[in-house]
Length: 265
Length: 212
Image (cartoon, rainbow over all chains, first blue to last red; front, top):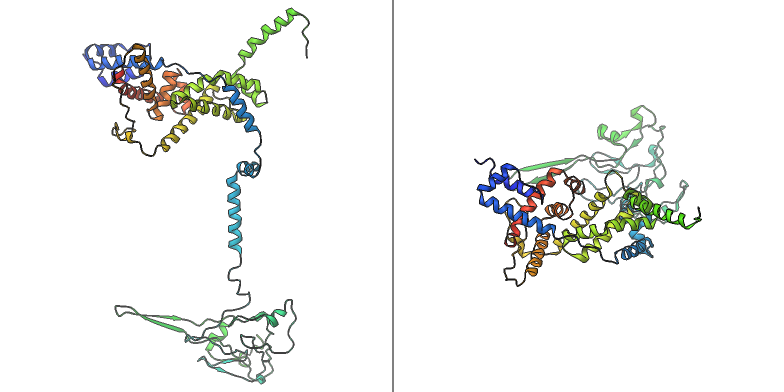
């Protein structure tokens, strides 16, 4: 009767220690199974062979070499290499990472487009795609079609020419401010306006029909595109102005302060 | 500091002192070494240098490399003396360091071998590749030579076992460690240790079939 199969017996043989005996069931199996008997004999022979390998001993100068090595480790390394190896308590990787992070922060926080000074605006582009090169004044009236009407200074508004590119600064009193010499010496970039250097526009409520016109383009920019299949797409971009959107959009007409009845704004 | 007043007293002190040194535990020696007692560390090295060198040699089959790694083991013990915890036996601790160093060295060697032509042979499904290690079939003239050749073959065969089988086999069959201790050294369960030892013996028997 086979109480154990070969697999179980070989597993038991593999776990058998050198001088231990197999269980009765395994021993009974070996009587009838020549293969397992051979495996058992080979295992015993192998175990004896492995055990006979014994231990090797360390060389006689082991202690001396170890002491020398420990003494060498205790001596601080000299020069900058020691700094990078030990980092004065801080791992060198951490130092390198901090350095990279610092450079990254400096680069990220550096003002971008440094040629564009705060307070200036980019050149205004006309709605039909051409660049406006006319000197603009605060009294320029907008009649809804993008045309400008020069209005005299008698409408209650003290005209003040805007210092645009190519326009020499007008003589006269200017508000004193720190760094005001910038206005005289600075060559303004084409189309840029330094509003902070301009005198404020004075609006008087005494005249009958003061008109404040802003020269923001009033017609939306319409772009039509055709694709290969005959389809057409139209994109309409509304006019963009700064600071006086409501006044312009109210009627797309010149704004009269007298008609508003509010007095000053 | 007491002074010795007579010869008899000197003998008495000598008799008392010698066994005390022997009884000092590994933990106490390491604690003294941490406090700067170099003699205590030398004592610790003396207790374990042969065992560790032999163990690493069986793992790597390279004596000079084993001596270097054994020294590195003691250097690490010395450096990490302050972090040593007495939850395990010191022998378990130092064998664990030695095992890690030996396995790390074996992996370095494996990486250094760009192409192992023998790695294509003797691979079975679901098993790690085991390097082909053909026995030398030349006739031997002397029994002593036969014995030497068998030992060389078994050392070579052990060194070709996969790491995860080699370490428990060497710890058990060469170093004579218990399953429990091997499990602690290898940071695994006792069942896994038994299973790996069983498989390692099977691999070794297959490799050594012509020598047995």
